[in-house]
Image (cartoon, rainbow, N blue to C red; front, side):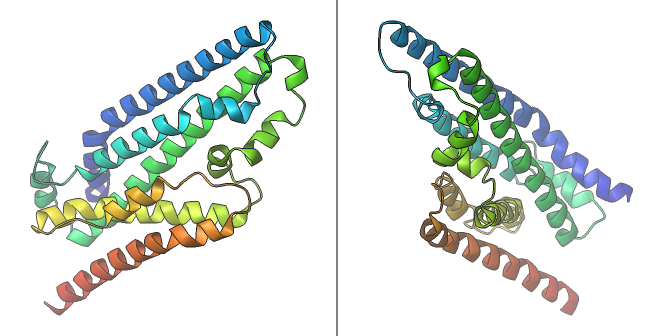
Length: 247
C-alpha cells in the first residue's frame, strides 16, 4: 500500500502548490470583478438607473472567462507530472515498483479529484457572489427566490449546479471522466514517445460547459466528442494491458 500512496504523493507534490495558487487567484479575481460590478450598479441605481438581476451581474463580471482560463491552466498543470520535462517526475515514475497501468489509474483518480475541487471552489465563489448581491441589492430586486431562479436562468450557474436536471449531472460526470482519463494519458504518451491528442477535444468541449435549462439537444451534440475520447482512451489502455499480459 505504501507504493500506491507514494504514487499519489508524487502527483500531489508536483501539482499541489500551483493548483492552490491557481484556485486562490481565480477566487480572488472573480470576487473582485463581481464586487466592482455590484458597486458600479449601486452607483447607477442611485442615479435613477434600473438595477440588473443577479444572473446579469454574473455575466457582466466575466466570471465565465476567469473560470475558463483557470480550467485551461489546471489542465496544463495536471498533464505535466510524469512527462519528460519540467521537474522530470518521469524518473521517479520509472523507479516505482508498480506497473504502468496502476500508476495511470492512480493519476486518473488524482486528476479527477483536482477537477472536482476546481468545480467546488467555483461553485463556492458563485454562492459568495449570490450572498453579496442579496445583501447589497435594492429590496425591490431581491426576493426569497432570487438565488434559486438565478441558478435556472444563468447557463453558467445552472451548469455548475444543475439542481433537478439529472441529464446535466450525467453530462458533467462524463466531462469529468473524459478529462481525468485524457489528462492522465498525456504523460503516458510522452514517456512512450507518442502524441497525446485525446486531451485536445476535451479542452474544446469544456468551453461548451455553460448550458441553458432543458437544452438536451445541446448536450447530445457536445457529448459525442466526450464519448469518443473516453472510448478511445479506454481502448488504448485496455489494449496495452492485453499486450503486457501476452508478453
